Image 1 (cartoon, helix red, strand yellow):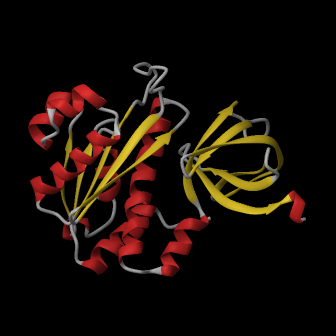
Image 2: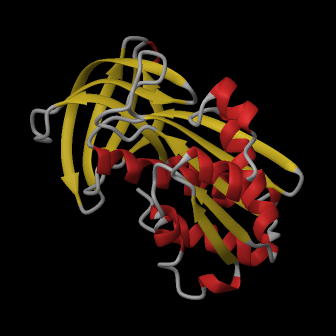
Length: 249
């Protein structure tokens, strides 16, 4: 598994492009900014961020429209796109990340359960958004959201730079959401993984092992594909893409 923290890979991308970054955080409460500034020299590319926890802050600081909040809600594709574009404009950067979600334990609904997180990006004149469904404690959902946000921008910038080597490194282990029960790695049960906006039901877990990178689970989906799922000590989950299917074995 990739041992270099994703914020260091993002730093390389921004430095090589000579681009700057701004952040707009809601449910992560400044955690992404904390991680970005863990990199020495971050002031060369990180200009600042806004923790816009309330709808009023999203409106007045980031320029999210009342109509967007009324129609789609704070946790939505439309809102995070406007948050990202707003903070990018505020700090006059080339790139921006925005995050809005429901970290729990309360605040969820059938339509938007706890763990629903939208991540938005603004890069030059384009805006993007991606939906995630995370599981775990409030702190774990915040950690997973921050990791996914940093990974998402790093992966997109690797495309801008046409850096196939980094793209392969990023795709080798991708942050994902995992539906599971239990806390002990020796007995933990994985019910499903969420990858590329799809829910993949898991039929069984074969081999389990632990190393310096975390707890590893070799899982079998109902479609007969084998996925290596990894949980780090901070609760974040990662996926190594399918390595085989039973009908090809």
